[in-house]
Length: 137
Image 1 (cartoon, rainbow, N blue to C red):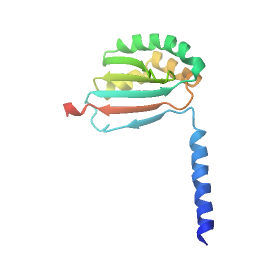
Image 2: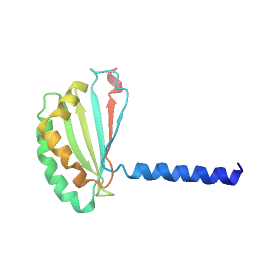
Image 3: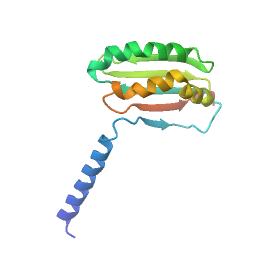
């Protein structure tokens, strides 16, 4: 097989993988970092890119989620931030006492109901990262 044929095969493979990745637009990408310590304080950074026409509705619809999440026993803080340079970009920044508190939160009715509507708001899959608080190890 010559070099030109190998390059064509490689390019086709890259394009195919890229197309598959773009078609998975409704499933959030969740990355767990150092999740081996169950009892450590946790931080969640959930990055969302919204459809421009959904921004106002999203902000309004998150008010109840934020209020109820802040009232959960294992919650330390729960805040929604909007990028001032790109109004379609948001971050939920959350602090939890441990992984059990996060698991409980993900199972609550208010989170489940909000999660079901997430596809209505987002323009691409959310990226959710969970961190251990390193200074408390």
